[in-house]
Length: 198
Image (cartoon, rainbow, N blue to C red; front, top):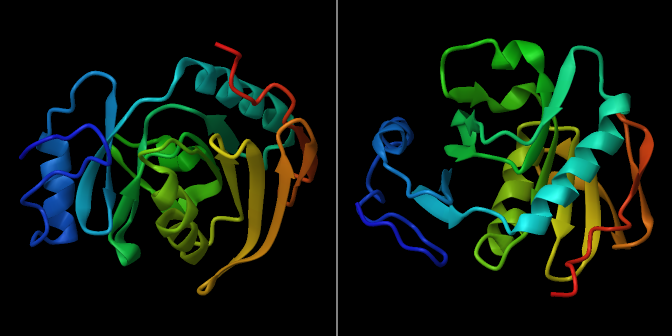
């Protein structure tokens, strides 16, 4: 398998089943500074985030943590959540999940245990964050999906998941407060989410 850096997809995986892709993903040696996911039947290797993305992720976690559903934790750890019905496996930038989903020795975590996911877009992942992940997260019944569009400097929250996608959406430019719906029911202050000057 080859690893490519920009919109990178490993080659030679197109004919593999989802289970075989998961096995290949487990065996893949991912270079430092990259993460790997299964998207649209391929193993996709993407560069890790820019430095200030970490500050944004910490702000999101800090604001949402007091509003978590009972028994849930919010993390930005690189964990792989699998969605067998959609044949996808994603490592969300931020997620909230029932702690029981994390009580395992497996590195393939149950995507249906998620109560919240957030993705910070980059030039190489933006298209998937805005399309394939929206569809997969909605079909899995994840109550809230937050998209921080770092290129357009705006935040979108999607909720009311269904088999057809998310039925509700609210978008605000960075700097404004964004209402985060149930099960969180809070406001997310997006001040400080913009890229630093240099």
